[in-house]
Length: 84
Image (tube, rainbow, N blue to C red; front, side, top):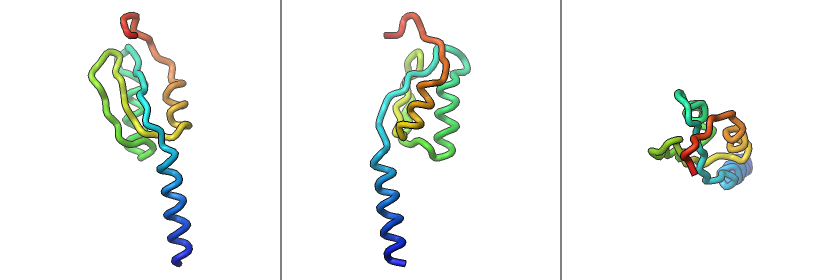
């Protein structure tokens, strides 16, 4: 049992260390499909430390795996002509 718990602890630690802190840019449309997906993934526990910053389009700071980040960046979105 001790070994099982040790292996679980190492696995969980390794998974948490692979989370990347990044900023995702939302879409210049309403409703924002990027923000909706972030909310959905947060409810599932797939991302953490979600901070939505007031801007247009919205900027969302998250901690997530590279796979989730790639999934969010692949969502088609409208780019605001005034956003830099």
